[in-house]
Length: 131
Image (cartoon, rainbow, N blue to C red; front, top):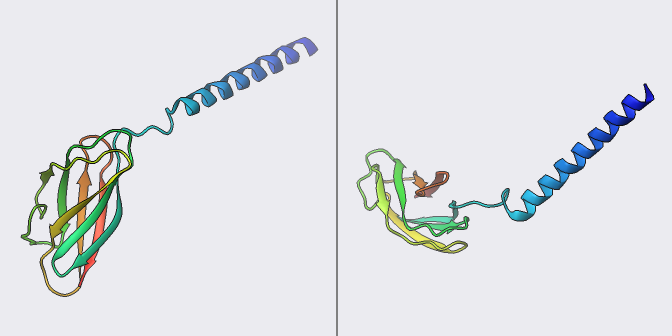
């Protein structure tokens, strides 16, 4: 019986070493850390009805356009991204930022909420409180 448990232990150790080596290779080659396109909101501000979002390309590929949908407040009628999906032709190089301006109509304190989606990758939500 000692021979069987030694063989099994040796096989398990070899499998663990091969798995760790494979994970190290994938991590070093960038498989885990690579993102092709990814937007993130760096900053959002509002002055009256003018909203400015600072968007950053957190990916590794250039983003040449994105779609934008303003989801709140209901009934807003500004441009270029108000309650309808609109495509913005703004080039954002990897690691750089760009200003995105919009109009958020209404009176009093209100939250202007946007859903921004690059051609590939995850959508992001940005919320700016206007007074």
